[in-house]
Length: 125
Image (cartoon, rainbow, N blue to C red):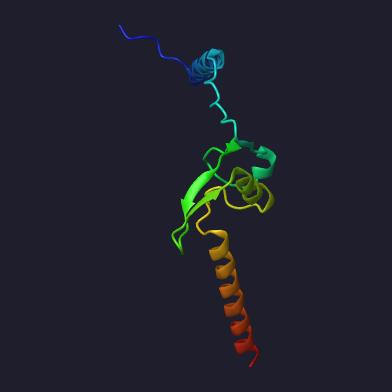
């Protein structure tokens, strides 16, 4: 014998109730513990990271990161304090990282400025 058919309204009510039960069950679960913050980490300010339009998680803190300079190959350290400035004050993209040491960065900035100056002179002629 077939079960009696339900109206669309009855079916929607069943779906809503299942969703309510699922939401209650999820709310009853204890959230996973937050990762332990290293002692030398610098706290991130989520309000200052709001400019990042990302589906990924925003950092809770910054830690020192080692990197190799793209130009000269020297081993460098991008400190947590520098990262905080870059992401929160300068509003850098959260997916970007340091790739040049200070000396090479200054040299690259000077090269770009010179190229810009030469280009402007060419436009003025």
